[in-house]
Image 1 (cartoon, one colour):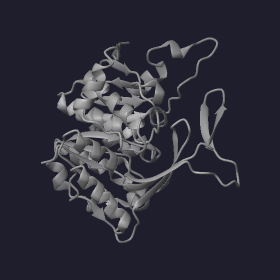
Image 2: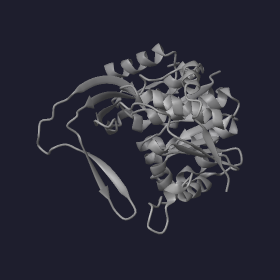
Image 3: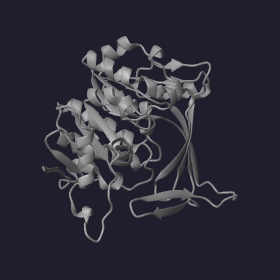
Image 4: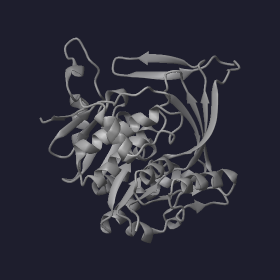
Length: 349
């Protein structure tokens, strides 16, 4: 029996860092976006370059395993050298690879990660086999014997199996945690109804939560200053809208602004843990998997899980690569002890 099985994408990632990247900010009345830009037609110098394995299912499985949980990963990869690199990397961390699906028709997923001088990144992704995961590929009896199922973002045709996996987990009393991702959300709420109802933990970033609920987070105006609120009222609306059963934990991450949680009764706000940012790639996966692992280990202690997850994510952004900064529970506690003022605030409406 596994403590957790992850399902999602597996990629070989090429990290490219260049200080020549420009950050362009574009604002409107109700929105603000930033773009990474390079001079058109120019030859850009690369300051750093590396290859690593990645993808939501791989990053979270690796973190679950190094946090002491018996873990397996279900991903679809190709049948080439890149695929073997992914399997070898998982085995090094002690992740079971017996449920990995190899395809002779599709290539292993590949990503190019462009990192800016600020540490943020833009990802160019070739989905490959990741977009072709089918229900018939998966050994459902293995999921039935697992305590938790963690669904990382799926894309392409793979999104079609979400509801079936959620229903299967629900019927077989397998705890379900999910990070939906934009590809699944774009299908429309009616296509992920079973997922939203079955999930014990739902994790979204603020943009995904806005896309799912149709609720825009309003900026400050002369008349109203929302930033003075512990939790933006529009974020509270999102959390309420997503919440669908009493025992469900709903999480919205908001980058540098921290994270917000709703358990059906109380709202929780946790700031970003102090870190020197090198790259933000993998921070979301680190936060999500550390939260779920802590939630399992602490028998549902939301406050402690939030603290541990924030430290886990902070450790990852201090390293170059999605998995380089993973740390143990012992190291997480050690870092928390050095910051006794780091708190989770509780908000009740």
